[in-house]
Length: 407
Image (cartoon, rainbow, N blue to C red; front, top):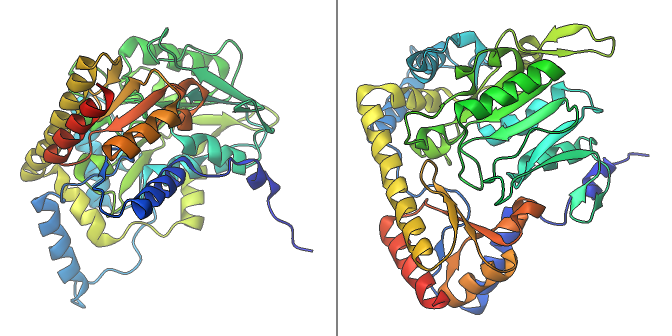
């Protein structure tokens, strides 16, 4: 008799963004003439940079010629892209990451979900609250949690982000094995300082832990005094795996390209406490379960690092950050406390009421979609996240509609 993975029964009834989509679809069905402005899910709206499109077209043409056609590519990614990542994303920050420590993939979401496969099922996990749901749900699926009770899963150490600590979780007061961190944070938009990351790296080294560091939004950091990679911290390569993405940086949400860095000295231990290096394990996992990102997509990603590409990508980021500044300014003017929006494309807002009630209020009265904070964890209740990913014209309309609704 075939049996299913019963850990799936522990998952909440609906993935957050699926629930949002269902509510929006129901509203549209009941109000077919009502225009909706979506500032909920973090999906970009501007086209890919021209330099990426040109590289994409050229690579497609290569695929049409027997002499330049590419079949299976390396599962780890083509060297031309990994070298650019090594040179620009790390060497420019004074960090040495070799191309063979970089694994190109089809998304940071996929990698943060898949990476937990290389760790034991009895791994003790610390996850921030509020946080991007994928970290938690993939570990529920893997059987690392107990039941869901009173808004939280058993066997998970929740790192609470609250107004009192500035939504920057404190170090756990117990030993944990695997730590999820995300800076700039999704959903709150807060950023990490050098001192903060130093504390986490010191903790991980002392406790023989591993940090999974999601830096998908690092390109939105405006303050040059802030770290852009955890590897700017001494000793981090021993204890941290970093995830990056082109989705929001260069508009690749529909094109799919990202990468994960697994330094060769990053380690974990077996049941006899013998040390093992994680680089080879992740490489084996990828070679077994992943066929790599397509050649045209990787050529388009490589173009991001050209002189024209750097200019065009910065223009995209500046555009969305202008939206973020407008949202933050207008919500603050209405008397709502906000964090984020300064070094990230997300604004985290104290809604002064139940998160889903505020979501419904904005949807039904203003026709604006936000994201209820409770969908990111218990500490998110009473907050909403507004995304800067839309046209400036739509953002301007949205904040005006919100102002009319809330005044």
